[in-house]
Length: 154
Image (cartoon, rainbow, N blue to C red; front, side, top):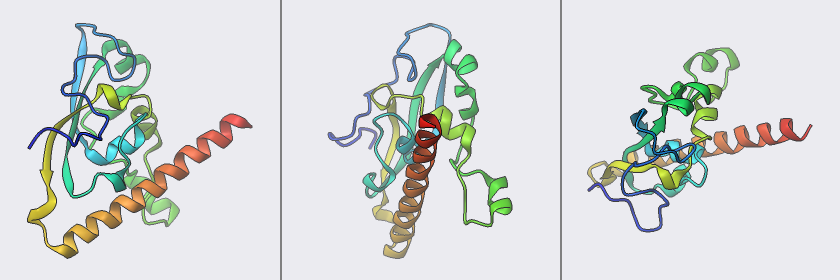
């Protein structure tokens, strides 16, 4: 199953830069981000609305956005979590500022769903664990964006 639900904003395939909309021939295609990353994108599906699915997003980024806009921070990215900050802050986890900022420059309607799998193969406790993680990530993303808004307003 590779097509996303009808109420998701994602494109059928990545044809233009997910950041600026350019159709530049010089581009990078990223396929490593899971569905939860949509919560950091403009207009993306929040983690708690992904439902009983797992999978990956795919998008193109033009050379300029990749290098000058810092989208290259998403090169082979697998998680929104900053592994180093976890030990320093004592909190269960913290978001990786650079990666979330890069993902926040992407527009969901220019991003495609590369793979989509139902979670029905998992047990109820496993699905519940995934939902719990999604809720925690969504709360952290909300907090991350609120902090940036407050700083921008100051």
